[in-house]
Image 1 (cartoon, rainbow, N blue to C red):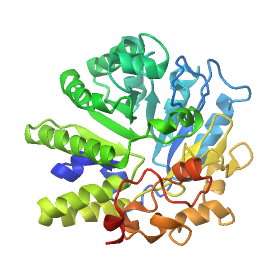
Image 2: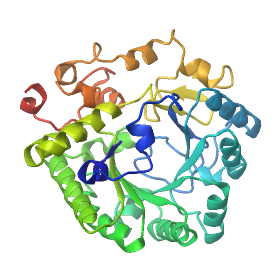
Image 3: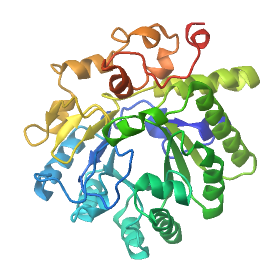
Image 4: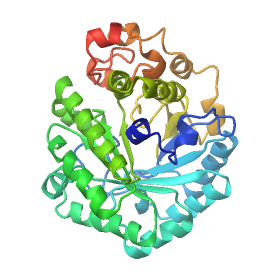
Amino acid sequence: MLSISKMVSGQKEGGDYLRYHLPELHPGPVTVWNSTRACNLRCRHCYANATAGPAEGELSTAEAKRFIDGLAKAKAPVLLFSGGEPLMRPDFFELVGYARTHGIRPVISTNGTLISLETAQKVKEAGVGYVGVSLDGLEELNDRMRKVQGAFQMALAGIRNCVAVGQRVGLRFTITRDNYADISAIFDLVEREGIDRVCFYHLVSVGRGTNLRDEDLDPETKRSVVDLIIRRTADFCRRGLRKEILTVDNHADSVYIYLKMRESEPERAEQVYEWLRQTGGNRSGSRIGAVDWFGNVYPDQFTQNHPLGNVREREFGEIWYSETQPLLQQLKDRKSHLKGRCGSCRWLEICNGNFRARAEAVYGDFWAPDPGCYLTDEEILG
């Protein structure tokens, strides 16, 4: 996760303590919990293969609380309630409150369609730190991606309800060949609607996202899209609009923005590099983890073909800090395992081998080069 707005302006942001500071207080991972498989939409790119109803055998309320107990012991700073659609879980608000009493910051990843004004107020009163609403384009495109007509307007109403009650809210946009032309309009929407934040996700073709593998952008188009995001973010900053603009799931973005700034603002570029170095690139299996609706633990939410253990059998921390789990140990010291372009890249300090799930999805090899990297050989090798 790269804060373009931080790199461009140097502004202080809510996630700074997680991204750029040493983890003495919260050494555990930010944890994504796919709390239910149930969802009221049928998104084409859903990595979780969500279904209309919950999966049989999802964690009960009591089991979920024991899982949260384990997160607290592991000093996890944030629990991201995801799905499916987390608001379809009947005990959602009870579990949000339970996480807060344990000193864990609850946030939500939602499709936004179920957020009435009353629900938005309940979310705020429950102490949810942030609501991320998925929109993947303007109305026609978004509804086609979601496979439900009217999904855009329902999600926009949910966003407006959050804004109305003072709940911090942002957008989540997955970039594909089909929708990248809407990115500039998304910036306009963010400004017009008073939205706090937008995360632009690079495509990771797992789950139903395998159907979109051919819709990923070519390297030159990716560069032009990142250029546009940088340019529009800089415009917000110049006009004093405090928005947090991030790109997610492609750490080539970190190298790309640093190289651009080294040419245009060499003095500031060194501060940017220091922030990027502190972030350390991809954090799957170290500062990012995931748990599914059955309690299986994974290195991140996209790497669900590599279970590490189950919180029904052992506490989260016992699994996460195990020194006998080979994949976790490899991910924490991955440089010697990376192959090809990733293995020979001179930017591992700020990229860390990019996204392993994407490499495995395309090449069938967890340590293969990330096909999402759009840097040239010259940029990689120097």
